[in-house]
Image: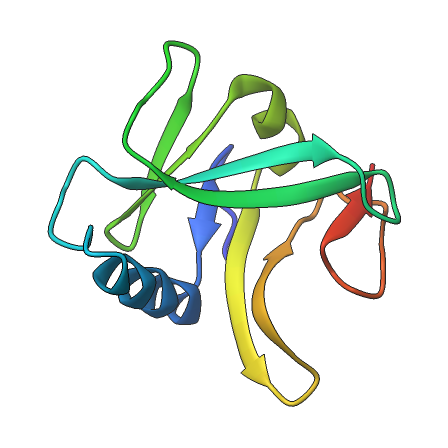
Length: 116
């Protein structure tokens, strides 16, 4: 991962999957939609990632664009997500989105939760 200062990034594999899911949800051609990334309490390690499609930007949202994909997060979540890359795996060891987060001090086995 090439870190850019204070950003949220997306891998090529994750970009392709996001675009596929947006097409399947019939929002792929609607430029008002973006990927909302947030951090919520819970999971084995204390914090969990949450991904949604959204089209309502809030005043304190932090907005990033990487590889043509708009990524939006609230300010509180961004503190945990600085320089994190959203990735996607379709391998035998697990299928789905995951985060390469340099801020996480530990992660759980499922890859969905972390601690700082």
